[in-house]
Image 1 (tube, rainbow, N blue to C red):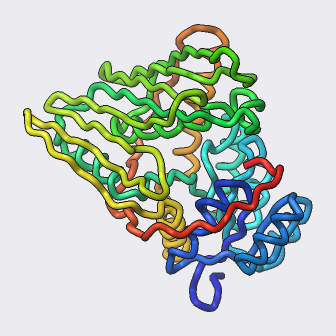
Image 2 (cartoon, rainbow, N blue to C red):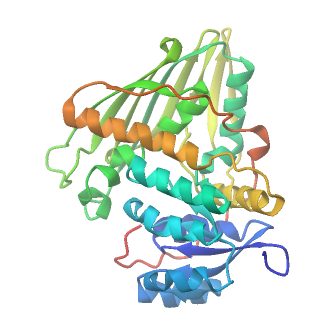
Length: 367
């Protein structure tokens, strides 16, 4: 049951950067969500974050106690990816709703186990595709579906950042590297823009000389879809920050940048060129995390279906696993056709103002 004000009560599981710098401030921007608990293995965060947000703190070992406490309705799960199943399954089995950071898991098997737990209990599971609630992204998807640029044929994207060599992601293999950390953004974008699933996957990778990382730091992926549609994207941990995509259709194109990021000064923008006429479209900076949380809480309170659900999460992980196999073998990976999803809907867009982010409490806990 929600709290006395009718708000969904969340526990934040893991107090790393994404929780501190995005989700926790964003919750305060909503009118239907509140945080009541924090789960962390870090005693410093347990004290300081709990005090800052007036939360009850639990150690990871106390997670079962939290699930049985009656203090929460949902969790926001932002542990390292390989631990998602460990916390998502027992929460869902306990009837606790789960907002799960992407990628959904580090294997298709884990995704299916999480989805099965949600199906058994009826608790809601949403994968935290924040852009599914961002107005500019929603607008582009709907315009493509209306046929504004004709038949969408070719998608290309670049998403890069220069990651600190000390970051744990630089030393934790493929499932913490750029393909799985940054790749879901262009991958999920093209799946929703094409409203289709890739049938062939091929990937090549490079490792920048002198960069201390135990997995390739720059990966280029080629996807072939039905009706001979193509997508190519490159993600990197070792290049200057950049984010953009181009979608070419039979009547025109969209060029979007910024298109994947969030935060201060980052308003999603795109240039539309249709039948030779070019127009700029700039959207205001909004709180992506507050928006996705408000949407998820509305689904919980109204009993409506969640759009970016566990099936959506698994579909991306299915492709990420194929990228890994392609990198290992050098061969094109073939995927079985899947029925189309409804995808992002117009009513998912949220326009909450960006929250002020408090000073980060930096410790050794991964995020």
